[in-house]
Length: 242
Image (cartoon, rainbow, N blue to C red):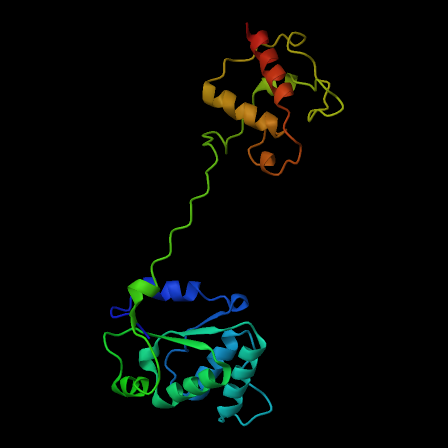
């Protein structure tokens, strides 16, 4: 029995995060507003990934549902069942859980989100071996996931750069070059490229790496970058501006 006296969402999230049926751990969050024993059996079956409600049985009879829950637990690697909202258990529901435990040998963990358990639950627990622990000890707050490294900031990422210098470049290596044009050279057109600020130069270099001058096309380009070709292209631009 785990006591969560302040109904802290941190402990609920920790219990739900431990749900891993393939590794033997099952966490059941009962359907709110329902106290029927049949509904809890359906919750367990649904958590196991089994279809509910059952067909072919009497609709109001909980026995088949509990029996099938035991069968599926025995047929899977599940060895540990954690039940949230245990402070809302009724005597019938608790007895059915004990029967499930006796049939399967499953380790049963009840999470009570109140400072005290209900009187009937305290009486029933005296009849079985159990341990009481604080939620802060067994359901600690999970460690935050490490933040993924963010790409370098590109202030001009969403702007169209219509530099005439881009039209004067041609591939230095026709076999693998991303640009297969044969445009006139800068000197043929009497063109002198403007002096680019560092931020613009960095953005042009990034788009040349991705074979696109358009701010959106570079995101889907599959052409591999060519650092040496890019360096020679930028060197040619610098030479033309002198």
